[in-house]
Structures are given as C-alpha cells and as structure tokens.
Length: 410
Ligand SMILES: Cc1cc2nc3c(=O)[nH]c(=O)nc-3n(C[C@H](O)[C@H](O)[C@H](O)COP(=O)(O)OP(=O)(O)OC[C@H]3O[C@@H](n4cnc5c(N)ncnc54)[C@H](O)[C@@H]3O)c2cc1C
Image (cartoon, protein in one colour):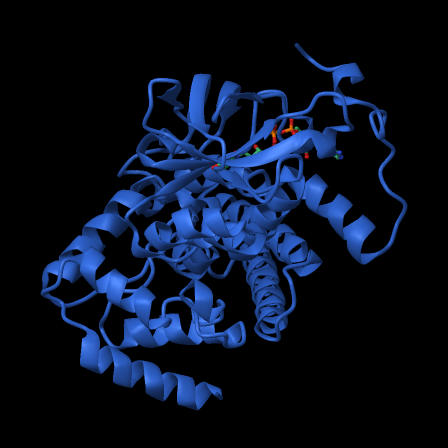
C-alpha cells in the first residue's frame, strides 16, 4: 500500500467511524481495533503490518479529519514500543491495549540519586517473593509520576553479575502503599518531576518486560525512542463533542507539567520578534547571534528529518537520535544567549513585567534542562563517538566485575 492509498483508506475509515459524541475511550477502542492507531505494528498487535512511515501518515490524517488520535504521554511514546519490541506475549497482551486506548498512563522510573548517566549502575532492588516481586529503593526526576498508573521500572535483580547483566525491566503499578511520590520544585518554579520512594512495593511475577536479567536491552529501546521523540507537540483539537472535550482535558492535564518545555528549547521562534520589540533588530551583535541560533535550528530540523526518513525506511533508532538531541541543546543555548543579548539586564526580570511577559527569564532558567533530560550532552557525544565513529570505548573501572564488588556511594 502506498502513501496515497493509506491516506485514502484512513479518511474513509474515519469518515465512517468517527463520532465526536462518543466517550473518548470508546472512540480510541474503535481506532485501536481498526489497526489505524499504529499501522506499522503487526496485525496481531493492533497494527496493519505496514512500513514505519504509515504511523506518522495515519496520525496526521486522523487529526486532519478532526478526530482524536493516540493518547499523549510516555505510555504511548515510550512504554508501548518497548513492550511491543521485547514482549513477551503475555505482557503485550496485558499492557498494549490499555496504553493505546489511554486507559492506563505510564511514567519512567529510571534515574536514581546515584545513577543517571550511569543508569546501569542503579541499585533499586527487586527480589522474588513467591509469585510477586518486592521492590525497594529510590528513583528521582520522574516526570508525571504523580498521576501515572504504571511505571517503567528498571531494577537490579542480580548483584553477582556485571552491572548491565543484573537488571530487569518491570511494569510497576504506581497506585499502591509501597510507592510514595513526592514532587520536586525546580528553579523555574515549575514542579514537573518527582522523587519516588519504593518500600516493599509489589508487582506480579510476570510483569517483566523482556526477560529477567535482560532489562538493559529493553531500557536502551526506551531511551532510543526518547531521544527520537524528545518533547512531542501538543495536538490541537477543534470542534465540540464528548470525545473532543475529553481529549482536550487529557491534553491539558498531561501538558500542564510540560508548560515550560517550549522555554527549555530556548524559543528561537521568538528571537526576531523579541529583537524588534526591544528595538535591537539593527544591533550587529544581536543580528549575528539570532542568525547563528536560527541557522543551528534549521540544521537541527534537517537532521531530525533525516532521522524520520531513516525510521520511515524501517531503520532502528540509532545515533541520529543522539545527534538530533545534541543539536537541540546547541540551539537552546544559542537562542538563550541571543535573548539575553537582546534584553540585557532586564532578562533577569521574572513575571509579567519582564521582557516578553516573563518568558525570557523563564528561558534562561529552563534551558539547562535541555542538555540533561533523556541523556546529557556528554553522554550523547560518547554514544556518537563509540557507535557512529567507532572510537575506542570509554575506560571503565567496573567492566566485567560483579556489581556487588563495584565501589559506589552507599
Ligand atoms: C527535564 C527532565 C526530565 C527528566 N525526566 C525523567 C523521567 O521521567 N524519568 C527518569 O527516570 N529520569 C528523568 N530525568 C533524569 C535524567 O535522565 C538524568 O538527569 C540524566 O540522565 C543525567 O543524570 P544525572 O542527573 O544523575 O547526572 P549525572 O549522571 O550525575 O551527571 C553529572 C554530570 O557529569 C557528566 N557525566 C556523567 N557521566 C559522564 C561520562 N561517562 N562522560 C562524560 N561526562 C559524564 C554529565 O554529562 C553531567 O554533566 C529527567 C531530567 C530532566 C532534566
């Protein structure tokens, strides 16, 4: 089936099935059952066995028809493809349907106080107790953990093998007494993240994504999708009807914690306007900095298009994700510097009477997060060096040693 046929079929299907008066979940069940929610997936798992490009085409057509697509959030963007890739079937059976219909939401429980870049050095432990795993430890920087139903949890299940080999990837039910979620306040005054304390948290024995001890591979899949997607754009739903109202409310709740994400990206889109209103558009330094940021943004956009094209041809996410992620950091920093040059000392004024209604000061305190979230710039450079350029691997003191013997902070 070529792209034009896919577009025609979706339009026909949506025309015959979309009913904005439906409850949102009912509509999504229809969409998922039809195979048009994720057409590149196998037909056994709610897809249509089409090439990867069909997902973007289908999503765009559904929206263009005025209907609602997949749920927003890391459930559909990260957990679902990880579960699909690694299975096993019982886990696909249990988790794929409700994540695609939006009946269950997810958060990512990877980072720990002692394990961020060195994620494989994490020490949250999971131990089998009869038919359940019992989990103890602490996670941190967990976006949206305060309203998630499930957590993508990576925990250590074997301490006597090298660090990457002793990890297991779980689907952890968040709403239970053993899971305590505490919000964190950031320097930009938003509170997107949480600390998550796990104290004898329990989950069924078979809620393992992939296999016991093979969690690192599944975690890499999640991270590759995270680099590829970054912060996904908010869908705009017009019109009236129950499904649309519920979709708007869902997006409102989900994107509330991401309100500052546009500022995190440096707002290169506001540079020209900012320079104009500040009367700095003729300043040669401002012009140079603005041009540099916008050129970097354009080059980053092309890199992202190349990555999309590779994916459309069926390629697995690879180092172009790291290159794209690095590019967003560069653009964010250059744009922030240009905004600061335009505003001068006034850039430090927060609140409605600051430049651009306070947006500029929010940019300055939000941009550092761009180079940290989803893997820091230095880590992306290591990946590019090792995976794309074939440079020697980073020296490591713990390679091959049982994790129990690796020196670490207590
Ligand atoms: C906006 C945002 C959202 C996030 N959301 C989530 C989430 O939902 N779930 C989740 O689990 N986590 C989340 N995180 C956490 C994020 O994944 C970690 O902050 C990140 O992996 C870095 O880990 P760290 O903070 O422990 O820094 P560290 O790993 O301690 O790094 C500190 C510094 O050392 C450098 N460094 C470390 N190792 C190397 C090396 N080998 N070579 C060169 N330099 C090195 C780093 O680049 C960095 O500059 C989020 C973070 C941000 C900012």
